[in-house]
Image 1 (spheres, rainbow over the protein chains, first blue to last red):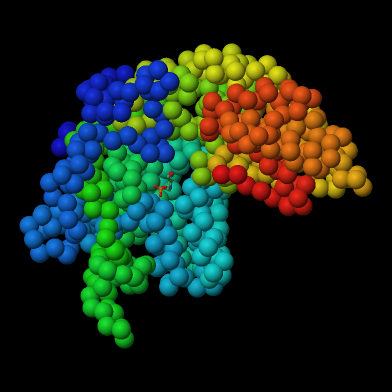
Image 2: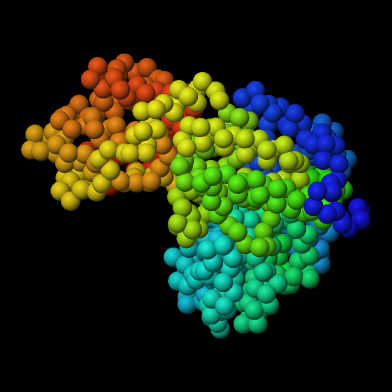
Length: 417
Length: 151
Ligand SMILES: Cc1ncc(COP(=O)(O)O)c(C=O)c1O
């Protein structure tokens, strides 16, 4: 473990050049320009440690898990199950069997909506989300609303992109059964005051689901200290493979919840009259899982731990400051999301060019950003913009990436300004 | 800056993007449809007024979008006036071929040569839909549909 980081702005938190060398893709060009990859919030690049771990599975010990009575199947099962322990430690869950493998954060939320929502929520019960949610944390609850007659309430945010705590409190009541909120906004970078949210939600007897898809890569998470009931994230944003995600749930809740899908691996016994369910975590993991991807996620977490989330957070905070400063001096640029407590994401608009045109133009300068609604259309409406450009920062970004972005915005101005 | 970019963002396009023609709703439209690009959230509404012979006597639009989609919608509404429904449909096909680089034997008539300025999108596969969204929406309106999506 690396010691806690005490780097000040400007002093490097780690040797960024050495880190960049771990990511083979950062060596390539885009349109003959060095690649400035500023879209990690959509999906992060992978270090060779992860790529190698995945290849090694296929090259040396691939077989199905939990089934084979031979050496390589046992070996790959041990690695696959061992990764669950790596994940447990990473978010400090109490038990390894509280870690459920899914395909991604979206599936994790849907699992809770189906298994918890359809069985423990009744007509008139209330679920609270916020205005800044990703569609993945809106649509499953709307589907539940339409099916079960629950009430979906939306806590408002300020123009800066912060949750209005007093308004959130007013929504809480005896009928609130679940509060499902992003830990960090994928559009604005706002970090929500989740300790307060959890305390207040629990005070009225509601459960809390945290969408950690964005926060998990920037902020150390201790689910026991937080006391959240569910925590979800995707492997691919955490420098791991796509196709693997995580649902953490408290043991007693997961035990009470029925399976989400039926099939192989999730049963204890099957007859045509009746089947009985496997114990946690396998109850929720029907069918052959994403074996190499899970092992790759374990390698990604080892990699992140090797640098340390504190050091990563310090490095990214420094770059976010730098980017915010540089971008603020661009004429006609408006930053969307100016909460004091934010991380790693800067969304903006230019008053003379549409985000799509901006993204197309800067792509030709080798700069990869996302432009659009970022799967958060209600938030776009709230902030009164059709779309934004989003530059997001990962552990491997450096000041040259930001400089490339700002310089490329000069091309936009030349054409449109 | 690359030549492809200059080719894409020609002066005419930027000008139409900034000052779109026929940019208003219409009270007496006979046909109207909403077009959505779910990928980017762009939305626009096309209003058409057809006479008894199914000839377009007026065309306008409203919406938010990038320079490409705004310019495309603006130029389209200018060119539609006076054309029959069939002519509008074949114009769409020719325009579509031009943007995608497909050759299905539809050629732009000489009197709409100016649409050629949008042919630069061919080099930008992710932007083709920006140019064609207004046209797809126009066809939907002609066919009596309320809403279409491109993805
Ligand atoms: C806050 C948030 N929630 C949920 C998701 C969904 O993640 P995935 O597409 O990996 O399921 C994302 C990713 O875009 C996100 O940023």
